[in-house]
Length: 135
Image (cartoon, rainbow, N blue to C red; front, side):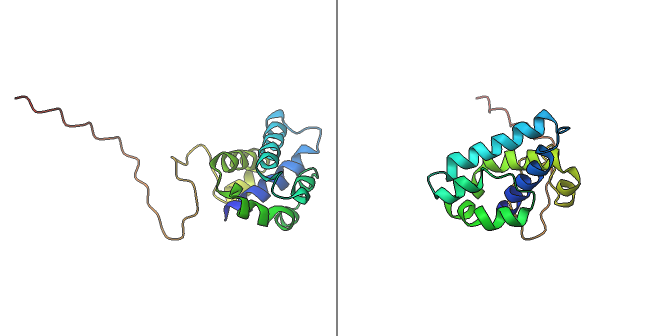
């Protein structure tokens, strides 16, 4: 899944949960935070994008159509802060979708991005440095 798709899925999930009275404060805060970061990053990019961010849309495809190009062209899709907030929002608002997309922000060990081939991560304890030679 591309970074643009993660961001648009998070916005849709946040909008879907955020409109319910029972939504947690964490989800509402993350949704508001993601939209604020995107407004800051994209606000000067295009006035239509800023307007699109004012709407609470629950379909990822609608978000993709409205702001997908701006996310990619502005570099917002490559912004680690925006991606982290989007991943956390998606994990909190729609855990099933986050699991289906293999988004688990608690165990990523710094491995964030798109992988287009099999990748193996080895998380062994670090080897202590060799003490300096005496002499």
